[in-house]
Image (tube, rainbow, N blue to C red):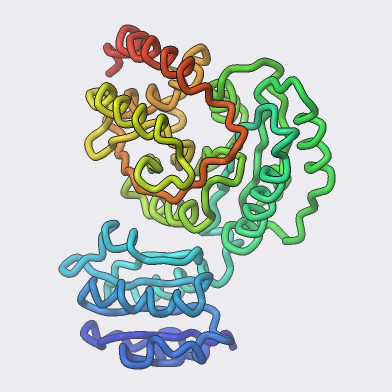
Length: 374
């Protein structure tokens, strides 16, 4: 039987051993939650504390020893665990939030099943990871490394997920390299949904659009429940991506966007100064709580993608990120911004001064073309 570790203050009086009787239940408490010996064989952990702060502490104590261990967090309407608590939980393993109702104890079983078996057909959702690539021949080692990390994350935690590398009109051998990577990638897991795309897909846009066209191509051609738009140069970390996916799948937000303005490593002072000036100018265009539109990491649900797509314009280039934020604000989508770790890689295709001038012009275009959207 699959061993399941349970941490509980027993305030909700949940009879775990009776409800999940066909699992090997190991009961613990806050005093031994940090003992790494418990996590050598267990498959998932249930955390049942009334106090949300105790929940976060226990979750992080567990994740310190086993960052990939799936967590089922039990809460209720009176002492609810919110996104502000979930954002503080570390690790890359899946997280599910169960609002406990004693009248529906079997919901506990369903959620355990979905954690232990991500391919569980009633719970699985397809996640599309869309990576824009452009003239990456000299930096392809970064692209290949990032794809390997994402593939491992998909195989372990997502199952019904695929990578889409969209070439933005490269003038070097980038398209050949990603097509070779596609041919060399095999799916080593059995998916319930036979209609999903292969694990890795190489697509060629045929023209350079400064990223905007790759967003539109992904939104138009890919069928998925969730979309992850992320730079391909291995500048972002899987833990941050997993955290954003875990949050958006809870249903509280339509879009989660990252910001690296306060966390990027190796960032030139010029870019820091320009980013500060841009934030001041674009503030009226951004949803409440969002301070930065240009960080290349976003997670959207399919509803947000369908509502944004008709309004996005390919000729805006890099400013398409700002247009997404502005349209999301006009359409009153639920948007959350999170700080993410980032490494600015050498060889970036951003031309600081030239692109800054284009961006200023794009701000005026976005206001002129999109201000009447309702």
